[in-house]
Image 1 (cartoon, rainbow, N blue to C red):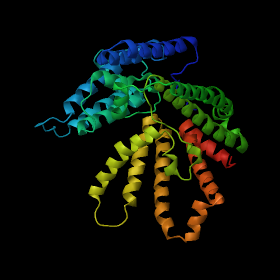
Image 2 (cartoon, one colour):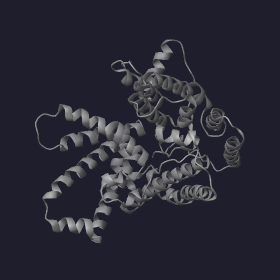
Image 3 (cartoon, rainbow, N blue to C red):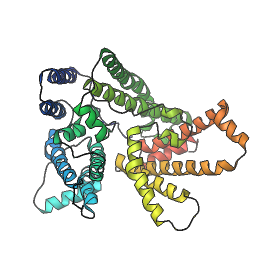
Length: 423
């Protein structure tokens, strides 16, 4: 079973002391440091320092890979930024994007790491491996940053605002993934922290801790007991379904709890981080689900993958007819990439294709259902039984996909058979 990543919010005194100390440092700098650039450097430096000192991250990964990579991305973005009379070379943006993608590929994926290891070994260099957690999120943020700066959607940045955007430690490991333009406004003019704002931020932190340490912890034993057993083929259908439900809610409480913690913590720094979950398991179709689950990732996928892919395919489309094939291909490619981004096992690719096919089917159903009688639409859209049926179907489509997310393909196949009571 896939272990959930270690979270930045460890419940021990040293983290709490550094967290409160960071808040005090930033509050003092806003009050006593008059120079805006100096305040911003204090802000950015405090984020990097916390990642180096307190979070369970191999410091070599930060010093020798992440920071050099960020410097290169920043320099490339400055070079790509529109300038009067300057024409960007063809393929320059694609080449810039390739750099963080290549780094992620060689660090995260075993096959690429093995190739790189052999190449370095042949050159007589055998570097010690090190962990670089959070790199997947950094790469997606770097791609967004390069695209938006090169297109002129955001103005040429300062390095301190870029550094803090990429390294803001409440969101470093698992998001939410902010957009640079929105983040920069808060960074340069931190939101005031009134008594009500402080209370709301503390409430989000408390809610996140409750979700992670109580609700997710209550669900975990039921999921792990079945998913991790060596005799998976011998468990009953009841235990298999219990594990599927338990894992689904464990994942939700853990991840949404982390987002609550990140949102509340960043708000104490004067930064408003976007919401990331809005009751996703209560949605009536898979398209609605992806507007409510990991919202910042799904909007990133929409803006930087789905829409560009769709536009490219539309240019190659010949003749009239429905745009459904283009939409279906765009969904499948986008979520195949999303699956591979989550991990290097075939199960993650299968999980992505599962959702790509589900979104395509939902789109096709939307077009086909227009030809059905008005009474059907009233039943499905306006009555409680119709809404409940749609919600139940969507919920089970999603939670069955988590079986692929949590297990490699052979174990997932066994678990699906056990869910159906097949030996």
